[in-house]
Image (cartoon, rainbow, N blue to C red; front, side, top):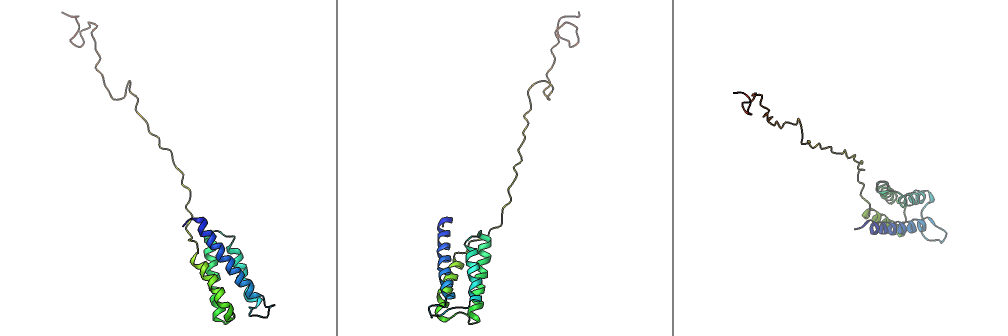
Length: 144
């Protein structure tokens, strides 16, 4: 799955969650609603998740899920709103990005390779040819 398609699905899940949470907080239509004190933290988390990097998203999606569980267990979410809210949170949990540790940049040290020069004085001893007639090496034509 590419990063773009994953982000689109996460954004769609966030939008669904935001709609469910906003509808849950609005009690003006006479239908079921949640207390503002219960809805406000959910809205803040959903908004923050949409703007965060992967590690922060993973952390806040877990926090959102835990908050939802707390509200359900405390019977603070009306039955008619529990399913849409839970579906939105579950979709976020399913699309939660992995939080991979940062990899520090590596400094590449240049490799220095020295190539020995061919020439004088590098371990290749050559015999000196002395044919000047001084008799020092037994060659040449000097002596007797």
